[in-house]
Each structure stands twice: as C-alpha cells, then as structure tokens.
Amino acid sequence: MVDLISSWNVLAEETLSFHQMITFNFHTRLDHATRVKYNFSTTNWENFNKVLLSSFEEIGLDSEFEVESKQELDELVTAVTDIFTKTIQSEIPKSSNYKKRNLVPWWSKEIRTLRKEVNKARKKHQLSKDITDLQNYRKLRSCLKNLIRDSKRTSFRKFCSTTDNPWDLIRKLSSSYKLPCVPTLKKEDGTYTSSDVETCEFLLNQWFPDDNINHESEEHSSIRKEVDEYLQNHAESPLPPITEQEMDVVDSISPLKASGKDLVKAIILQNLSSEVRVIIKKILPKARSVSNCMENRCRNYSP
View 1 (spheres, helix red, strand yellow):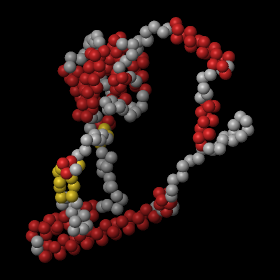
View 2 (view 1 turned 60 degrees about the vertical axis):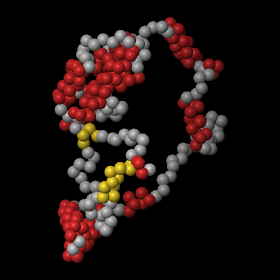
View 3 (view 1 turned 180 degrees about the vertical axis):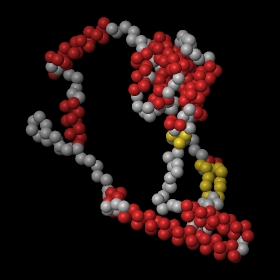
View 4 (view 1 turned 180 degrees about the horizontal axis):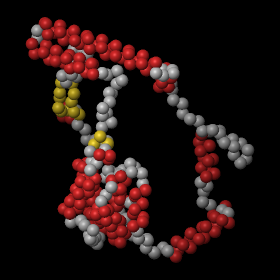
C-alpha cells in the first residue's frame, strides 16, 4: 500500500482549525477515463482541417489512396482514427463546467479577501513564533468564521424569501424513494395479473409472440414465403455500394450527438473541409470493395 502513495503535500490554505490538510496521490492499476468537455463554438475549423490534411500527408494518405487487403484497411482506419483523436485533443479548446461561478451561493469577494489575509497571518506566525502574530492570526480567523456564518444566514434568508415553500426541497430530498409499481392488466380469460413479473410477461407475449409456424395468419405465411424466396435467390449477391447520398446523411445528425472513444462527434464531420471529406468518404467504399463485411473500426465513420 505504501508503494502506491506518492507526492505528499501539506496545504497552506486556511481550514478554520489548527490542522492543515494533507494531500497525496494514490496510484492504482485501474485506468479511469477523465471526461473532457470541448468548446466547439470557439474552434478554429480552418486550422483544424489544415492539421488533419498535414497529418494525412505524413502517412501518405490522399484522395487517390488504394488498399488491397483487410490488414492494410485495418491499419489505415487505425491511423485515421488516431489522427482525428490527437487533432481534437490539440486543436479544439476545452471548457470548464465551473467557469465564472461560485461553488456555494454564500461565497463572496469579501470572504475571499479575508481568507487570504488569514493565510498570510498564519504563515507569518509559523515563521516567527511570536505571540503577537499568533493573536493577530486568531483574531483574523475569528472574523473569517463570523463572516462566513453571517453570509450563510443571509443567503438562506434570501432563499426562503424567494420561494413559495422552502421546505419543499428539503422534504423532497429527505423522503424515501418509492419504486413505481406496474399496474395489473386484464388478460384474455378475464383474470388480472397479480405481480410485476406476470404483467411484464403478459405484455411481452402480446407484443412479441413466439414465431410459431403452426399458429400464424395467412398474412404472416405470405410474408414468410416472400422472405424465404428472396434469401434463396440472393444468398450470394454482393451488398450494394455506398453512394454519396448515403455518406452525406451525416449532415442531418444532431451536431452534439455523443461520440465514441475516438471523440469524433457529428459536428466535427460536418465542419470538415471538402478535401478532408473526400478522403473520409472513400474509406467505407474501399472497405466494401475489400470485403463484403466492414471491419468494426470502420463503423466509427458510418453516419
């Protein structure tokens, strides 16, 4: 356990007591993904596309590229994915959820200023060990405590005066959560379901009945026959090629739709330059020409 702890540090910040907070890093073998929020509204898309094209040129990728095997295709898609991820991390600015806002409603500039004075007084006392510096530190710390207490009271009174019933939120947070109960349903024989499991099973059988060839209607029999004939006649037919119209459907996707591990959102694909789009659009058709089944990594670029 001791080998996993490093970077001990005693904070010099005021903690409203004689104790000082100790921080340290605890190293584990688990990789925890850190969520990063990107600010797409301030992104320089022209520069973003220039970096992409420059990275493509370094690996010899242009609009005339050719692939002849699955291995080459897999290496190409891996390289393009890495380029996109690195370019996003380097060229798109990051934003913070806590920008320009207080973490608590009662915090103020006066408290922040007095806290700095308390920290300075404590450091001065720790260096000098003088009784006068200690008294001054205790006096400032007491003022800081009183100021925080008064600010909290004022903030709570303001909250109570701006809402109809300030106890509604407290009652809501303190009340126990009750799981919703699935209502009973009337079955075909006139009886009712008696439990949540029975209700769910009844709905499942009604909406998604078992595929039983002995209990299907004439319409279902006709559909089954058409599907079986189609599968027999087109078992060896190649899949149709991907067209420009199918690739351009990405422009209709919600810009901030969640991305995968490659960090490529729809808004990034929608802001690609014409030169980059030509290269990206050729990857999927190349994949279809190499194999009848696209590699899983190629699906990251499908609309």
